[in-house]
Image (cartoon, rainbow, N blue to C red; front, side, top):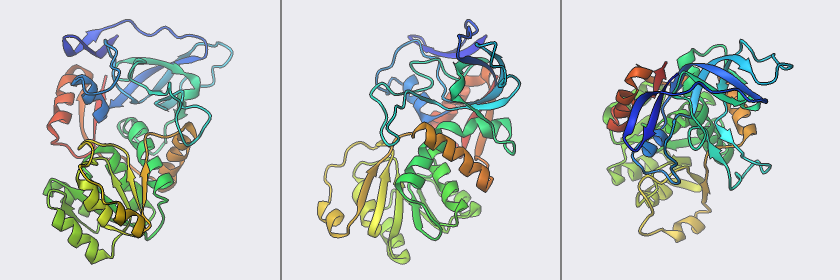
Length: 329
């Protein structure tokens, strides 16, 4: 079968062996997969514990065509998405030490077929296209745990989504809109802010202008929830933008560690600083039900063929996209 492989020579399309389906597993013929920033970080060697060669990809929609146990054939013919969690563990709030995400070290979804344990299969929402369903798993799960569980999202809450150009941030944005929260965004690109306003955001500012964030916060009376993946020195600006009792939820640190942290602001204003990463199997199930309930369609930027997979990665690296990048075998 054809697959995208990352090895010592870099990212390229290769011919690899079709998966053998072991007992307890299912063979899925992939109709669409989607990229995450994680895939590009692995390509660039910026992700921890990389084990080459890598068959990347955490997101997919496809059809089950074979199961390892001939007694259980109920999944055959079903259109499914794949829960990207592996070994989350018994604690619903904290992952195991040996937890990992589909796509490394296990073989991922950027291929024509994938074999996964049957308990990773979830029926794809009927109202979503293959491309939309493929875009959902990892980004949707991460956003759900961050904004719904940690942020305690609710109607009329004042929410700021920082760096809304990213996939997880866009799901958090859509989830907040779905429950009728009051949503604002930040981005380094004016066109992205404009697209979010067109989709229902009340406004937005450029995060490169800290005074703009402060002015926005003052105009709305402070935010109840801020969702962020950057960290770095911008964290103090965002914390100052919270209303007393507000929640700052961090699910990444692309800007690294802050050089200073205003602890007085945190304790005096009774702020909550919450870390979040991915989510449990129950969170995945809850996220899919949430998407069904509110009929949320993931934002799709572009669709590439598997043959043009390197170009899909390059498009992600450029940052000139709004929505998920989908790859179809």
